[in-house]
Image (tube, rainbow over all chains, first blue to last red; front, side):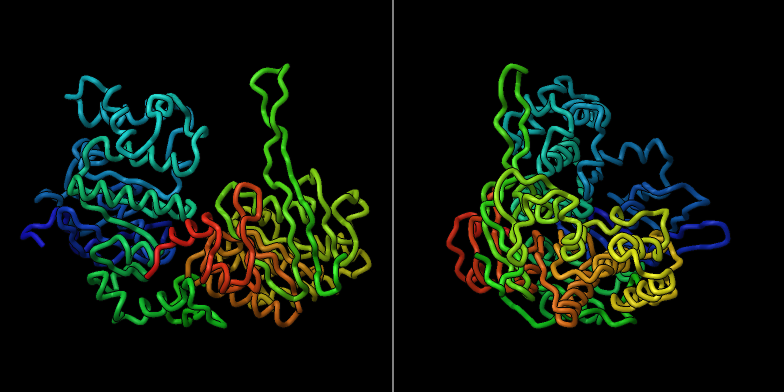
Length: 281
Length: 265
């Protein structure tokens, strides 16, 4: 790993306030991502993995509803201390996001081309041939007939094509870090494989880092370099993928891997989490 | 002829939807969601149905309970063809065949409490049941899916995804069905919750002698629960066999592609 990581997160804590009640969504989360590295974050609903990813660029409700402490450093700049207009340049610029449900992340009333073009003209004002750039972005994610797709609306595309369009939009601004929040959970396995292969190729070609949020250990094992496991708002385990797939230090990681049915290893019953390890009732 | 061992026999089932013609004077080719499929579900067993979105697996499940219109074919339930029946004639069979849906968030009425969600099927299919008996039955149902009976007065939003799916299962069990069509029952759940719900479904099958048609796209889950697996693609069944046959020795190219796409670890 290089000396200075691309992104460094230190003691990130996120608390939501509603009336007198305070809910800690993430506590003392610290990690770093090197250039070109894929870091997978694994955990169940409510473990704080998505919230932590959103907090990187403060994509959360403002204080006092939600308070974020700690530091997020990208290339030596603390993002949490930045004013809103500077942060807006980072969002979608240096750090781009793709989400789980491409259908609801795209704006239904604009064409794909318009939405990709909007990202380009916002973050790369120097580009004069926006149209050509849109086509190039769509070609790069293996969309056949990019001219036709650019004129289509999100509802005219399949889930896999929508996710490609989202990736095209995210990558059009040459991000250093791509945050992929369960990018294939809503997709079929064959489409999932195509999308993950696509992300792997783009990372190789561009040296882009990826923060991959998932609950699929199969994807983690095949795609990530490092993995960290989140449980009840904390990182309970961190290591290289080969280490963690072989031996798990935390009982939660062990239990989580044990309860997944695996192809070709039929058991009579599936293992479940014990009450102490459960996140949701 | 359906043998007594087969609870359900599907012969040449087709569900076609009218296509959209480019111009009004033209006739459109129908969209063949399900195109002439045949299979049997033996009593007390689990038949897994896998395929990608758009392969027709959900439509197949819905056609069996008359939630999708049949274009052709026979659905023979214990020797009686229920496929061509009118809705009124089908009514007594509805309680024998129940359904569990994928999305535990959208398949429960948010305004109703759990008691009314579970009583509704009882009111329809057991009108002679007294109010108190119904309430007792609902409490018993909640306990059978491992939820405390005190939760009867709560509303769906007070439950987690896994608990809601348990309520969906309790609702299906309310009318004492023989066959349950499980349409992606665990796809929306976390892996640990998924394991609990799968175990619960297997326990209930053992206790109550239920028969399942288990529709899912997760091959590992289907392998785990099924006695027989059907692989669907583009409205047709391309391959069927035991889990060991399908996973150990897939013959069709489509099944091989599907298996190769599953990330292993």
